[in-house]
Image 1 (cartoon, rainbow, N blue to C red):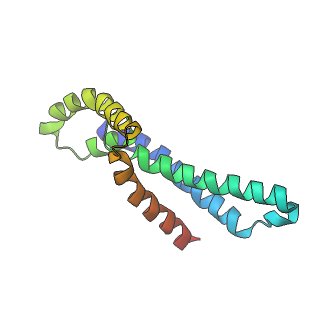
Image 2: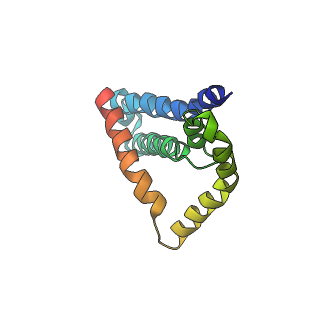
Length: 130
């Protein structure tokens, strides 16, 4: 069951990565400006923002705090003898996550400090692949 949950959990981040990869290819090869300066520029910006949003969602979802997918991915690697304690941690995960999000609103950027380097690495990886 742990491995099944991990496979299901990885589907979302993989879908985000593949969407970002596909849209990066579109950005590199679609002649946006042939649609006119205004429309082409607008659509190019929409696609670029969508790439970044998908990368951001991927990174956010792999944070190992319940209810995010990362908690299920980590759970697959927890030895059975510790899994009960891990399950107890999962109950406080949403409170930890909400606390981190709340801290962001007050300028305490713990989530950003964790996520932004990973977003940059993922974005660079996608650019290397394409």
